Length: 512
Image 1 (cartoon, rainbow, N blue to C red):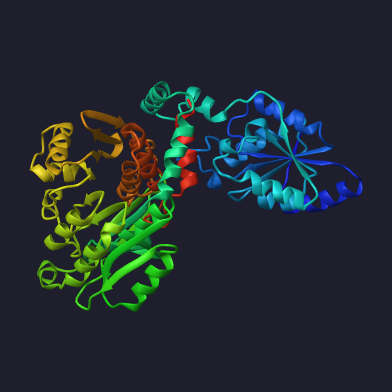
Image 2: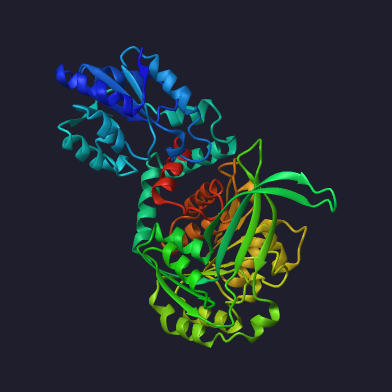
């Protein structure tokens, strides 16, 4: 039986083993569901040395999508500790195994033979892992046992994925072949070549986390304990951050007031993104302050109320848009694709819409309805779009139709805007995509959520990149819906969707 031990406590053991000229072998992984392939791997690894150490990635660093790992840290370590050939089990509290390698300093780092081919390593970490192993005098070795998949077994027999997601994945594999994941990776890699412009409202999201104390005695209002607060880059800022993780050349066009603090915050958050932000003294930079409490029984956060700092409608009419619109007219033609992020907060007026439509080679539109613009920021104010993304409420508001089938309305809006591809997101039902006469459905990929704010922006970001590079509609819908699902497990816009996380989640989904 193996001993569960911390990486720090293993150091003196390591030094003792080294003095005894004992060879240390290290295996590393998630080991979410132990199977025969793992046993073969451990046995082969153990033959290479005298002591076998197995490190396990902590749950918070497992990027295989919401709901993974299926088993928690203690369960997975306990499973491993019961295997006779394993001497020590260590929890790895990092995304990579680099820190564990430094503590263990293995003579042999054993990986399964499936990692011999670089294209099988979505994370791209094998090279850096091998370099660190060699730095400490060790070498990498690939065991030769039969390859199984914990993810595939979980998906098939443990209902780790909803049944309709498994059905969709099986259909995609039947249509595109068993190497569909390799095709997805190539499509996503192609996003890197795009020159992208993001045009839209910047929003500063302020989240105040509270613990509800109860109701006040005098006026029956909610009384809370203040815990902490955070500030996130929302709106077009969030879209630009998502896109930057996939495309090298990204420029954000927007407008703010003269606030120095806002300028510093945007500059800090938008690393690597070219900022072309016009400052206007009469413009009010949108700030949305939300007060939240965590649901005791679920990971989800409940919003108590929000306070918005926005321009009023009369102020928007008086704003001078000429400098901003002239800038767009001069420069938009240089980009492969333009993503319009219209939150209805005063940036995009009728003249701006004309500039966008006249100068964009490939124009993507997301025109959002929110509490500040309900019924006044409708996507039909645009006359054309190469692609668009709306949610069901925005789709119904476009035609004032509450009962008409959403598929019929999507067809109607697609025709009206002359779009090549279009999407409507439908919450827990997933998303519907349209290309020519083809309608595709992608179910919700997770029903475990922390916060839905910004999920639509993530979907829109990846749908736009997919459309601009000619990704088939069913694959594009899967890619976009995966981005949205990842985003629902992030509070606010605290983090953007990372390429490796998205690819690992899609790999999990397709492993059926």
